[in-house]
Length: 174
Image (cartoon, rainbow, N blue to C red):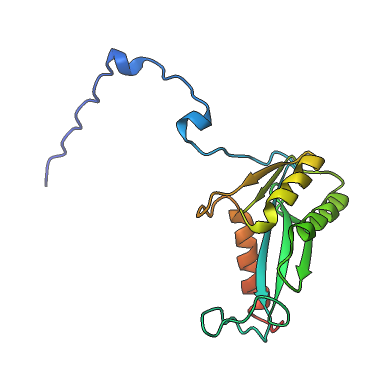
């Protein structure tokens, strides 16, 4: 048997370390700003995905890639309430939707929910630029954009897409 050694006592704090550090705003520290959904329709996430049809056969690599439009695939857009984890509005498109198409979907979501969210989180796709920002200004929603390469910003919606594709569309032929 080996004898059990006692741990050394913790070091004593010096006077300089005992001073409280000043609290800096997130922009000064480089920390990420986090928006937390506090009630239903406080924070919405909006995203688009491509769902290949049977004709598309999930061939997305060159030289066998097929165009991401009907009849090879559908573009699906979803407005997702972060607090309740519910789909507020959804729409399928035969080709990649424009910013006007996405804003029309958002108008339908506001009509369905009966209110506009305070925050909208999206990726930085072409549909979420000037026209979308103007829609947010007119409706009093603050647009927030996920960092490029940071999958955590719209993780719930990305998980929804994965579940939808795995459990629905890859099991049946669309």
